[in-house]
Length: 280
Image (cartoon, rainbow, N blue to C red; front, side, top):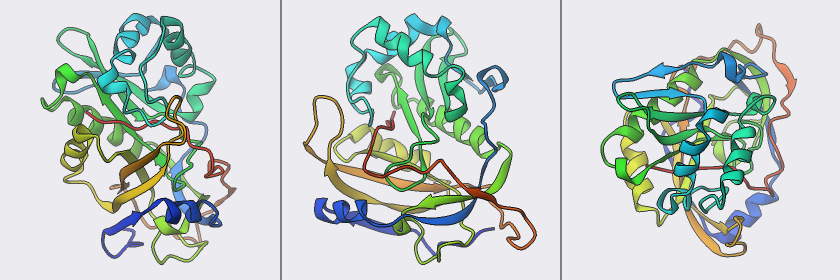
């Protein structure tokens, strides 16, 4: 197993510290990441758990998805939107961005009750190519309030993460901010992680993620303060909580014998932030 972190790191950045990180050079590391392109929508799994059917969101789900996307208690915590959808057409456009050819950049699913077919949640990795905070892909889960504190979010979240970790992988070069790697030198092999962030004032998320990640290997957790980037909240100071979870199926590649792809194009400029994150 990879051992690129000796123990969980606790971190906290105020606004000034975080702005300084924004101009820190990103360095290239070697990481085992899913093969590109990701499997198309048509080839993605439909997963049945004890209470849920977890599958990609399709155009035929428009009315149900709009019902979910218009709930303020859930959607206000989206780290990209920060508000409910204003119209059915806005939701239609969101669904279109989940279909081909855009499906090659996300791993995102709906959570449907197995008993009734009701869409009660959405989650996964909404954008695997744009990683503005640390370089690691961000994960989210958003559940209808009527189904909070009943275990649905944990059931959904763990299943989607397991499906992501199970994808075939290849060693690639990947750009990261050094703070999220600890004392590892650029160019070394590091274990893959996923990033989760939420507003520190979001009580539901503060309760949900520690529970959902109680058995998961976590390398970092902490807080940072930054200017909000969401529509209608631009320029407001927000304190975020976050954690990084490590791929539990990781293995140490032999860097001398395993080929490594050229520089990964996934990592983007950290000055632009428009991913999603949420909580049950």
